[in-house]
Image 1 (cartoon, rainbow, N blue to C red):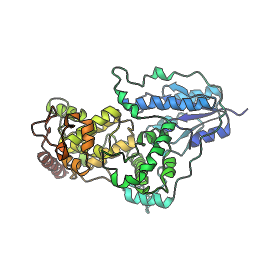
Image 2 (image 1 turned 90 degrees about the vertical axis):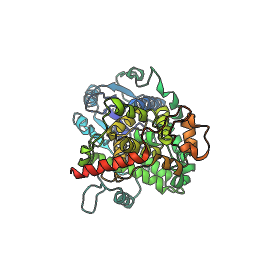
Image 3 (image 1 turned 135 degrees about the vertical axis):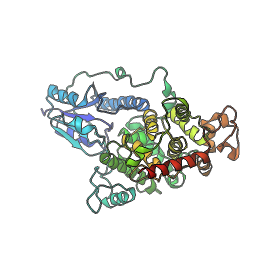
Length: 453
């Protein structure tokens, strides 16, 4: 009998289009394993991500049990755990999908006979090159290069059968305490179905709406986006599978372009592994941020986190985030702009809050999004692009969205719902800062930053 083959699951919690699983199964009986690594080398997932991870692992285990096996759960430093498992079971090899977060190469170095396979992106990160042979730092030429490369390989179906090798007992998922309990703030997360089945269902549900995506994706009151981001982050559907599901449908290109932005974020992360903590443009290290350790600054940060800024569009988004673990992308940009440019609070405070509260919290995409809004990224909006929250609310017809998530304003009709309310309204607060004053202050701070260069 062939020696066992370990399939090490990470952010690729699926059986369909799973190159590592396919390679392992072709070589011998498999040992599917996931390791909860809580060492300092890894940035630990936030609360919303832990909730999703619990349910995604349960779904993967259920799929493996339907094939006659199960998912082995181990806890500890991942490199040591996998190496120890290989020695105990006599495994001939370890197979895994290549990941882009900066901590993985350090962990992988401890694992003998490790075979890494592609499958986390449309094309292998670093494959596409500029005419000069360098890495891309601007999206548009990256997109052109991706189009020139051609479609990703067709997705492979999930295996109809698997041979499983004997494996140790492992740990119980419930013992990991990934779910919130006191209080259970995830009660509003019932809109989600984590796992591969949920990902495929979400893709199928989105396809009839795909023709509307180009023109309506920025309107938060409408269901025009896919909401596939958490499924893509946890690898419950591969980027290639999503691409081939959409291609050929009317109006597919704008959405395919967003899948390409995901690849571009991975490019950014490999070039700038500290993207979540250091601006790509060093001059932003000198920005005079508001002190949030106490007093007024701390109160402003709390008002933003809790959806009490007095700007209805921002507050609706922040409340949607807390209730569902997700926020509409247009509103994410406006909320990020208000934090960094109206309140002059360090973008890293917002990045950390999103990391903890988003079910789709992703190191590459989250960091790139915040740096894009700030103007500190390699291909980002300029700093002086300051979103006007009232104007954005009216432009993208966010009235119904606001009435849903800010019930204090549900009785307002027409444009009145967009605010601002100088004296508050029905318990809803007035704006914490005036838009015009805040805009002038932010621009002055940026000019001062350039003067100190």
